[in-house]
Length: 165
Image (cartoon, rainbow, N blue to C red; front, side, top):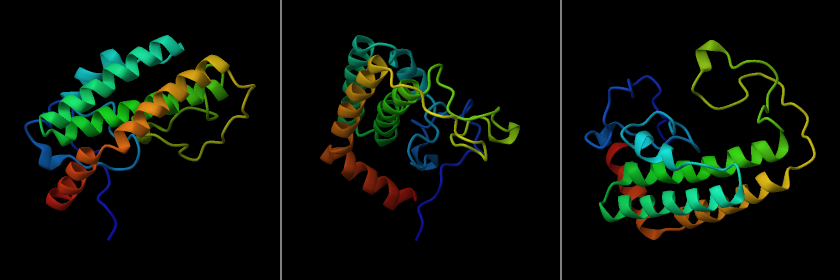
């Protein structure tokens, strides 16, 4: 049976998913990373990837928050921290491959704003790799992998999916 997709129809600006974890769906990849409150507000101020030093500090801080959410039994918080680590990797890689960060040709369609993906747009050609952003990506990838391999995270994720979908 397919897993439930991230529900973009909820009013995340008004919704506290710490109080209502039953409404949270993991989705695919980074879905909802810049929507789910209060976690977006807690994690976003620490998310930086412009330089390897910024990426190191950011990934360590966010990973520490990931561990704190796990200690509190807060799967949604841990999953959101994991998504920020993943987004640190993917955004760093995007900037490593595309100066300025623009990966697709043309604007995001109005009905797809806030959702990731090409949405029918062509991918722009890659440029010579930026070694600074590539190093930032490597730093975030290591912390993302560490989070994904955490046994408590895997247990809470399995329980969340069994309980809520």
